[in-house]
Length: 248
Image (cartoon, rainbow, N blue to C red; front, side, top):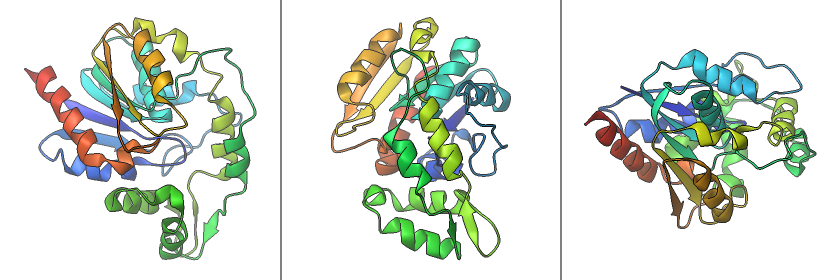
């Protein structure tokens, strides 16, 4: 059985490195979604269903899916489309939102469009991003994984997920109807939310959890939206529990 790791908007497979390292006796796989890392290009405007289709392209039936933010929504889309795809899901801060389902303006889009996109080297990118409050609570290996796969180029490097793509993903985050479809996902699901998240608040996570036929919720103290990068040991523990139960 394989555990599949699906990353969030603007990141890449490498952010899962510290979680996967703690599961070194388990078969795992992580990949770069379209428009991210070394993943395939993505057309604008971004249709979030493309991420769900990518999950179906890269995974095999019978595994466990672990996703964060956009990556969690993509796993739910895939499972709703193919009920035999996964045996269980761990959905961390999933971007699964109530309607109306339409593209919207987003403050995050404006922030994304202002990002510095090129750096003289990976080391310069590391120094620039490491100084930001956003990354202060990250595990060092998760951060190093992001720097390694989140920037492309020889010598001068650029953001693998361009500001234009990132901004448009945020605009499309409210347009997909996954909220209306998760009631058909009849497998064990764990929804995880950071206590201090302002993206998927604990209250919204409770509403999400109630939509699934067989789901539980864990609100993690002293954590925010970037829960997998902040507490990889905790995520690995929860995944291992699912692996053990599913395999028994």
